[in-house]
Length: 199
Image (tube, rainbow, N blue to C red; front, top):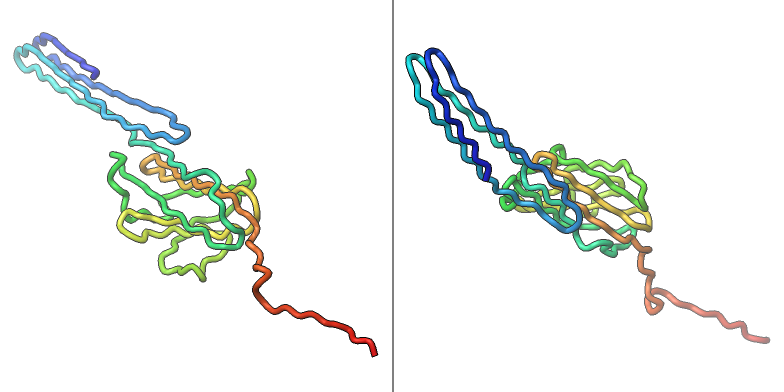
């Protein structure tokens, strides 16, 4: 815990001011999270004479908890089928769920085989699964503080969806291995055969 003590004797019209700024930053990679609970004590003592004054201010700036959360890498999904995933966002304490977060408060990056795609993040409220189309990621709050991201991968390969919440310095990374659609089983559908008879 940082402690700053100020001890001064002031005479006449003197004044004492003090300010403490304590900052911290960290880069998080992989499956990890950071929680900071620093404390600061600021004390000022002065023997005042005449019209002297003492003023002090304390400013402690600590960035919010900044986790990057990853789902299990390369979840296997099929091309041309809707992908549904849940996303968790929190306030600065890292525990309280952020509610009513709109797409405008988020940033989205979509990658397919290492190439960034220009897909927007749009509201999925009122958009059912059959109405969803490829080329967009649909963002929906389906319960207070609980969100989903839906999209149609339109090509086979490795996909990555990165949703960032700048207001609370959070990011969620979702990865997919998109495979070809499963073919129809040979026991299904119409089958026929023709035989030529000799006269």
